[in-house]
Length: 513
Image (cartoon, rainbow, N blue to C red; front, side, top):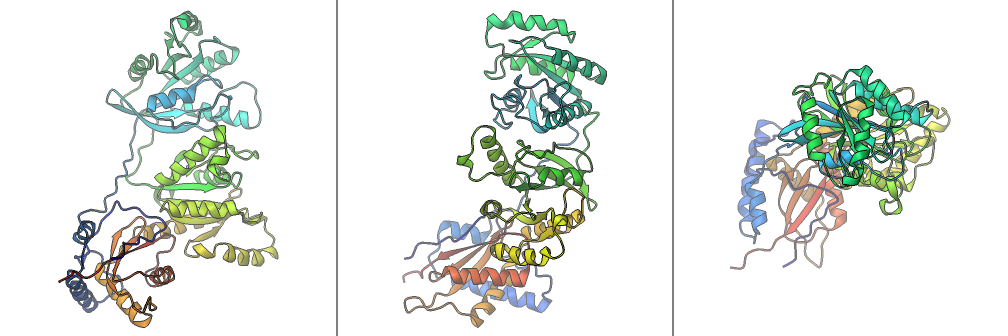
């Protein structure tokens, strides 16, 4: 017997469907009579399938032992604890220690963190939002000034602050400037004396009483020494209910902004938010940590995630860029839809195509946005349109929008494209309607003979959504070209604009009598 052949590009098996329920998701354009016919067809095909050898996983799929649950959990109005200090005192290392995983990008070089980045955290049963910030410096310009401004915004929006100082260096003029900034803010402050790796450095930590912020808490963020006592002190300073966090509405959809470095992802997020939420600079690779921001667009809440630019292949990068690439991949996995930004003013590269494919492989809904379109002159645009059609021939199903992140031109077209892609990502076809569609398709275009035999499609069901995954039971191997033909006709008939779809084929033989 031929082994099952699972053809697929990308899909998740975590959602199941009851194929025996024809009323689960009736086709919008089907009449009542068509529904009855589809249900009868489904029952007949299921009865015929009983004559074939079926594995336990086949029976589980047909019986529909799963649900299409959505485990998204969005915390609401949690108190906010910001971690601030000058560059390279160990803020991101402390953040990773508190949240219990290597989430924030860490490197020995100063200035790795640039934006303010929020993480959910918990200590002694209390949940809160932890905000990592870039290093605060005095009298700086350019990107360093923007980083310092983001740190000041983090202090303003926090309920309490962890002020981190390098105990081995002692207080500096910059530290004293930060102290004045914290006093003006009026926020509760917990002084953290970091890099106290043993008793010999305890005296250096005691010297930080001179800052006038109360007891310094000696810790080693790298080794975890003293962090428990520090968090107890932080919880005592942190209110139970945030005075600054905005309550999140139920179920905002998560949108990841991805693309090569310097294509305008951060500029687009700032334009959508309506403020300078993330640091923007002409230097490629400004963003390193994924930055989440709640945005109200089109009367609905969205969580936009700005990500680091994906450079070539991950294994060809090093240092902060390597970890930033890993964080970007994780952000795509956590998102529901990805907006791939492409620079319209430059030729599309193999890297752009690879990023699109990465989103498809992750099984996420997709929108392609051509940024800097306003820089194209009228004579160039028709030629560019034809080039795009050729370059994106494999993803013609993805909505495309032409925007300008700098001016905001046509950014209002982003939400309708996102909604179309997400609606397709969530689409379910009833089992009866799916089998009726395949019956008509096979009758008009039968599978070519293979080894003198013609494989038959016995039954089909949609195993999951997000993205839609279809399982076809067949009496023989279905050629890849025929599977692509089925996918194309599925899109023509049912839409599926903006979502990858997967078709798996399980070859089954009749039971021996």
